[in-house]
Image (cartoon, rainbow, N blue to C red):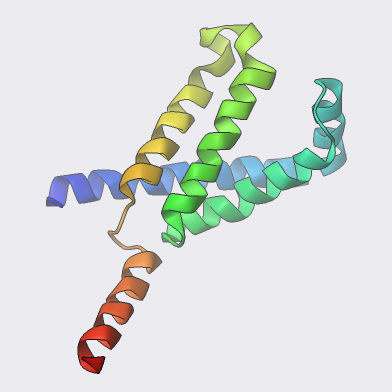
Length: 136
């Protein structure tokens, strides 16, 4: 991967992770019960609020450090699709789902392409490669 692409992807990964981490943290700091109530008010199971908040909080941290990046980014993309179609679509693009589309596209890009620069995934992959080459 060329250096510009690697750095650009790293920036996308870290910003995506920070954004989701802060959204998950806000769900807990604002009182997860409020989020549960809001989920129920739009016809979603209240328990889903816990799953979304945990995925955003823990997943955001994992994306920042680059651990399980592709899988976590795919989960975050699914959350954005859910947010768009359950809560934001009726609000229109502006002041509605424009941020959600950007987060979806960024998460999808990371899920498809990964981000190896300064990522724990790369360290783990490097150790696996070392173990296979020394064992042979």
